[in-house]
Length: 96
Image 1 (cartoon, rainbow, N blue to C red):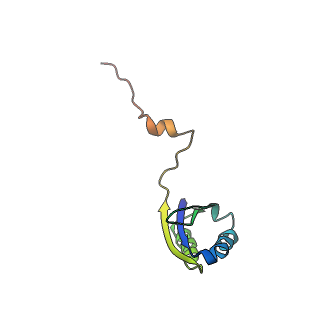
Image 2 (cartoon, helix red, strand yellow):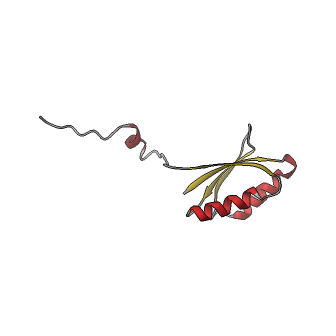
């Protein structure tokens, strides 16, 4: 299960928050992006079940410097290999 976490962070604590995300390790974190806009960080998280997701998000939310945490759980992942199946419905020709 993949979860995107959007974090608004106090600028004075940005390095501390990034360090905390790094400390969570590759078992829990796929990627971390610094972004401009309403949020400062978008982190792609790996969770193996809802309980591990909740625990991971709680750890991030309680990190000093994290002001806002918004999450999105991925329902379907679209890749180059499966995009055609999603865009083009599987229609079978029938003969009458």
